[in-house]
Amino acid sequence: MAMKRNVGWHDRATRIVIGLAIIAAILIWQVDPRWLALIGVIPILTAIGGWCPVYEVLDLTTDNPAQRED
Image (cartoon, rainbow, N blue to C red):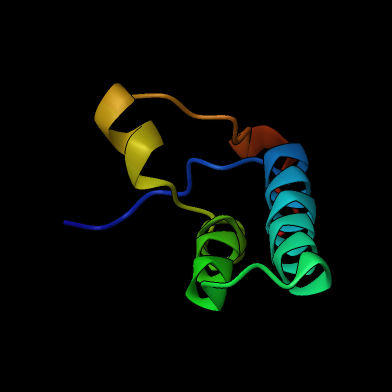
């Protein structure tokens, strides 16, 4: 089963910003369980891969193949 891209450009940029903000907030405030910073990695990985498993289950997409440049 091939994974189709279901995360669009704007959604990807937003996920990267949110992921970095989560990691930065945890590191800046020095929250005791720093492993929670891994939560910030999840949106970054889905942005890099362009595929979100939650979108797949809900049959959603924010990607527009007509505007894709690759």
